[in-house]
Image (cartoon, rainbow, N blue to C red; front, top):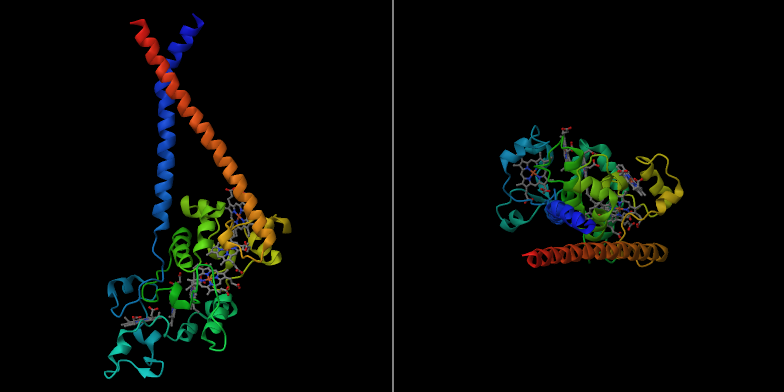
Length: 299
Ligand code: HEC
Ligand code: HEC
Ligand code: HEC
Ligand code: HEC
Ligand code: HEC
Ligand code: HEC
């Protein structure tokens, strides 16, 4: 008798039970697709071309400027534009040859910070013929000038914090793919990029857009964390933000060990989750078989 009540009760809630399983699977799939979509945002500095799209230029932060304000004399590497005798000169991309000192007139602070930062240092070393080119994660990459991160003709102003953060992720990822990937797996990446929460930290909130602080020293990292976690103490900076082996240098043994542990715990948690799900599905299936069996036996 008791068993019978239980069974008919279960029959009533069975559609609900099945619905929950389907909804869980659907949510996981939506999550995966959403993530893939967000990762495909174009980098902001990409695409420099001889033909200026004047419609896009008119929408840009520089729309009110005259071409002369940035191009002035039109002399690049000692060559006057446009030099009819040098058609090859016309076909070169100007991103690496442009004299960015011209930006300084209007953007003194950004320029000064850039000169003090790690990117300008890397650029000086790159241009120094006596020094060997530096190796960075993912092979040899060049150091960025203003033009690698900003499309000067099309850069928009007044974008939301989240939009700026998403575009920047694409720009940084082109040279720091491992750090970009580990950031996306971090709480800040999930809250900022996936959920679009403006309170989260984007790359430049911790590193600075132009100073690009390394943050390897706990004292420097603490200053960055304290902007949003005012109660943070030095131990707080022990939390690994870029928790993948690719984004930790081989010399940093303690951090590598920590990352390995994070991975082991993550795999353990995943295994527990997978086992529970497998049990859940198998259990439902067996129950269904039993229902059918009971039904057939009654007839
Ligand atoms: C805010 C500064 C700025 C203004 C204003 C500006 N430019 Fe430029 N321009 C640049 C920079 C920087 C480059 C170097 C390439 C790059 O990063 O896009 C460039 C490159 C170019 C190039 C070479 C494109 C290539 O293949 O790299 C052309 C052509 C050009 N600009 C034309 C114009 C014209 C025409 C105007 C006016 C409608 C204009 N620019 C206004 C900054 C500016
Ligand atoms: C003649 C002055 C002038 C020059 C030269 C100039 N800019 Fe600008 N820039 C401006 C003004 C004005 C704005 C709009 C600021 C605003 O809307 O708040 C701006 C906006 C920007 C922004 C967007 C800021 C935002 O609001 O997000 C970037 C990025 C930028 N400039 C980069 C550059 C770069 C790179 C160069 C050199 C190739 C350059 N600028 C040269 C005047 C200039
Ligand atoms: C490594 C990429 C990178 C390089 C190189 C770079 N910028 Fe930026 N810049 C950014 C990002 C990302 C932002 C917006 C995010 C922010 O403000 O934190 C930004 C913001 C700006 C702004 C808006 C004001 C501000 O500080 O928020 C200006 C102006 C600017 N950059 C000019 C320049 C100039 C001039 C150069 C070259 C000396 C340069 N940038 C080099 C990434 C870069
Ligand atoms: C065009 C390639 C390029 C782009 C784009 C780029 N970087 Fe870099 N970055 C470099 C190079 C090269 C170095 C120097 C590496 C070295 O010395 O080990 C570097 C170094 C760094 C460092 C370490 C600085 C130091 O003092 O040691 C940080 C942090 C950094 N980048 C963050 C960023 C962020 C954040 C962005 C996006 C806003 C970005 N980078 C975009 C090429 C790039
Ligand atoms: C919440 C703060 C935070 C955010 C957001 C963040 N980072 Fe970092 N990043 C750190 C800390 C802390 C370190 C230094 C410790 C380490 O190596 O793990 C670091 C290290 C780095 C380094 C190595 C620096 C060196 O000296 O070699 C690079 C490159 C870097 N981050 C790039 C990025 C990029 C690109 C993004 C965005 C996609 C990003 N970071 C977002 C905190 C952050
Ligand atoms: C621009 C703001 C900002 C900066 C800078 C920042 N964080 Fe966060 N952080 C957040 C936000 C927002 C959350 C999500 C909080 C929540 O939902 O509870 C978060 C969450 C965290 C969490 C998860 C636990 C918690 O407290 O909620 C840790 C751990 C963390 N941050 C560490 C760091 C470290 C380490 C740094 C410096 C290297 C740092 N953060 C820099 C905004 C920031």
